[in-house]
View 1 (cartoon, helix red, strand yellow):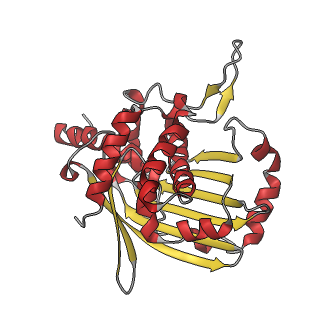
View 2 (cartoon, rainbow, N blue to C red):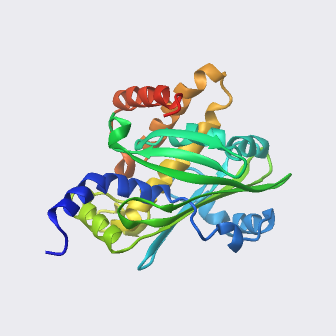
View 3 (cartoon, rainbow, N blue to C red):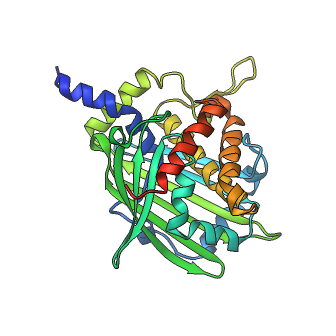
Length: 305
């Protein structure tokens, strides 16, 4: 027997959270900023390169999604054209206080609070299951936030967490954007994380049980009936969560045109309706259950816990 019964019990308890956090993918010790040409030039070049894929894809929106798996880490990316001016996107996503309102839209985010001191800005996040639960039963993790660069035509933001549940580590996220014509913007969202033996075994357990029939978005083939076959496994997990977080960003941006008192409800409705467009991959709960749960969690989020 490789692991003890207590270890197995802990693994089963935190398996859903482990799967979630693999989809959060926040920036870790190795910064994307150190690897990137921090300007709008490479991002605009990518926009030109992906022109065909952005115009013609399965998503019914200008979006390109990819994922990569290695023996010790995972990476997911989304490039998307969003129908919001760059000033709106910059003001919304280049501000740590707004990220909690974005993140709480995800089913598994139970709580988020942004705090700052002289050195750092930190997002305290509780991750849990897809139903109401006490914060004591959720996994708390702290992500460092850093605005990397802001210019009139470009911004980049990164977040980082060195450790996660079940031996996962070096969570990395990178988000950047640049303006396009006609009041639109081009957005790039990247995340990655690393894992060891414990994390690999936990993911294998998930994929062999409650996650065995779930799929991602990459098309791996088309059988004679003409229906696409979608990727499964770890990359399927990453792609589902990539899309959930992108749709949270989009829902937050879409709701900004409404009066502040109406924005929460508009965000919740937009996020749920958008995920239902990809119900094969993303359907988990019904609308009424989601709305009630998120109202409760948003109310709790207004308190510093």
